[in-house]
Length: 133
Image (tube, rainbow, N blue to C red):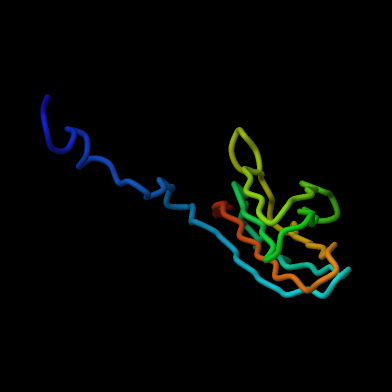
């Protein structure tokens, strides 16, 4: 059995996404501490003109154990609603990213359904593509 690196090792770039020249990586990370029974919109992102956002995955967490809820919206349409206990990771769509076009607004709302203050953390990942007109 041979030792060392495989033949294709130098042709690979582990951990590096392969994006076209018109594409760029996109992410957003927000935190907040909410009082019991309150909600807040942590993410409110407007996709710029001549761009398309492909939302691929995310992580939503809470600082204390207990059932919480979040909603991901695109404009006024619900993309995802979920109850979770402390940590929830997800792909948005098993076939790839969810397409959000120019002028649409991505929003994430979290609720503190607990009887104590909690910290909430939202991280979303995807990529934006510039549309040549």
